[in-house]
Image 1 (cartoon, rainbow, N blue to C red):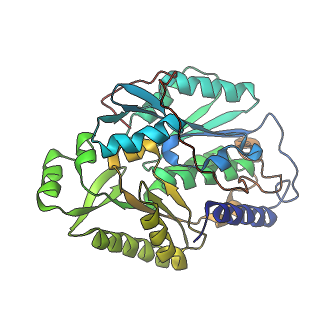
Image 2: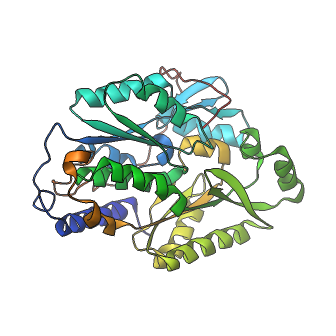
Image 3: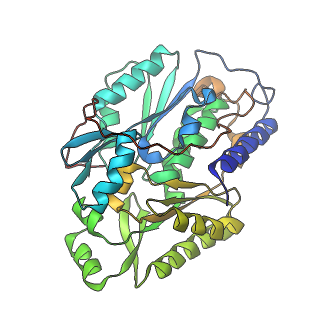
Length: 371
């Protein structure tokens, strides 16, 4: 089975190969001007592995955590407390809600990047059809002097994660910011995002589907096949078993990968063996190693235990040559592509250890406009 480490190593090699095809300072490993760098900001729905975010070469990439509320307790995405509490809450059918990060949290991040010497920011986030995060980012962008381009990805999960990493690489190559934004605005619609859940109850509770569909799913014990289309969740098919739902998802990913070169990722939550089996099944059709990554908590809160999903994103690496040459207009630096290894780490995420739940100190912004 492919590990996250193998996926990261493959990604690293691909970035090096892309750099060698480009002309100018990117090809020869020369660092861009310090004051002409572009930072990339996203949110934790992107599910980017922590080892990527923690690597020194990802200094210009920020992933803002999204709040998750279990009962009246507020936790921050990525915290040990949430890692321990969320599965129990979902299993016990306790109330779980999510919220967008506050505009103040975005403002703080934008100002920190400006103080670090970045010339501009591209801030790309979970679909506006699922969350008010984009609106919070736009509010914060009006409060800072550094130019901020806010993009609605119309996507989520590793589909957004792949987009963010690609944007970071392009920024590191010094490609024009206009081209980076144009790529992000179209990439979400080109990705396949399909998933299944044991039942529709969590999605119904979170307001992501109508109560009628939730009732139908419960009455007939169907296993729904769902997709993210036009930035919202839609019902693709009702199947009678989990195996049938997985077959439908796998067939769609295979068809996408056979139609054009794709990178694939698999999500699961509380069902690691099933997610790994799906990844192994799809590996022959992927152009890259397939990482198995847990749904981020902000998505798992709405999908429930046992959610299983697949992401298939076209590989658009050939676009670099057409875009290069505008480094002065677009800046560089979310990922320092001049350094060996580009944007990725070379170690696997380590399992999280249990911890005692504690009250989160970072205030959230509860809202019916949940993430």
